[in-house]
Image (cartoon, rainbow, N blue to C red; front, side):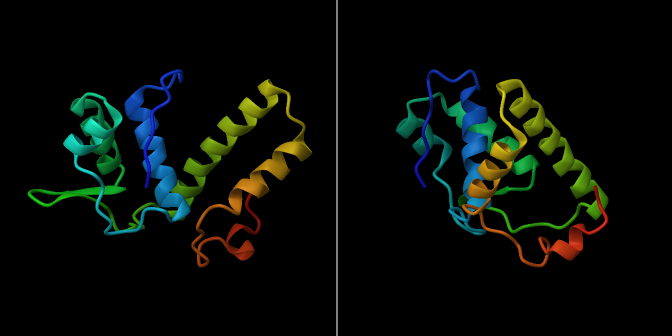
Length: 140
């Protein structure tokens, strides 16, 4: 996977890295057990401070997305199912509300947003056992 930094972004560099790794995992570009570049290597490739890469990796490790194996490197963690269905749903709805708020402020119509979301959703890897219509039935 290729990593990049947008110098014109208002998002801090470590958060740009966090976002790219999260997306890579969600899209299936990064698979469980896959090794990521070392902190030193990635900082050299991106010409950023190693502490910046270490901070991104630490945040992703705290979230359970990465696993640090001392002496071996940093790897994509195996998925964990430790959140309850209600906690997962609540966390997702928080993100949906942020997206909707941003869309309203940017002047998007509801139909246009739905089309954009559908287009982007096709680019991600979905867990069939968790995404069935039955699983969301009766939930707002």
